Image (cartoon, rainbow, N blue to C red):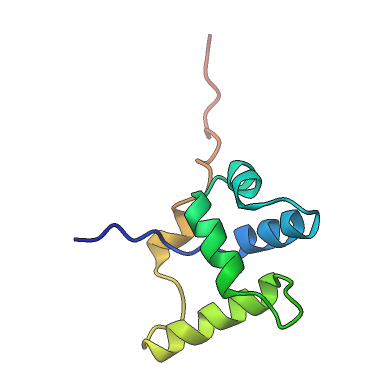
Length: 95
């Protein structure tokens, strides 16, 4: 089975937009966002506007439209938590 990398989530798309607008390339963006360079390159390539700029809102809209055409209205729940940091401990550690 082929190893498929999941697309960036909405928050990552806005980080990509900001960094790309500041002139960062895919390698620099991947180091800051924490995603594979190939995912960043693919995201930038697939979601360029006519003017050549990356727009996170348009990329997210396109992604949602794609999910609807596949019969899903939103991301699976497990995808929402894959790249989220672990929650802070509810109980302080005693030294």
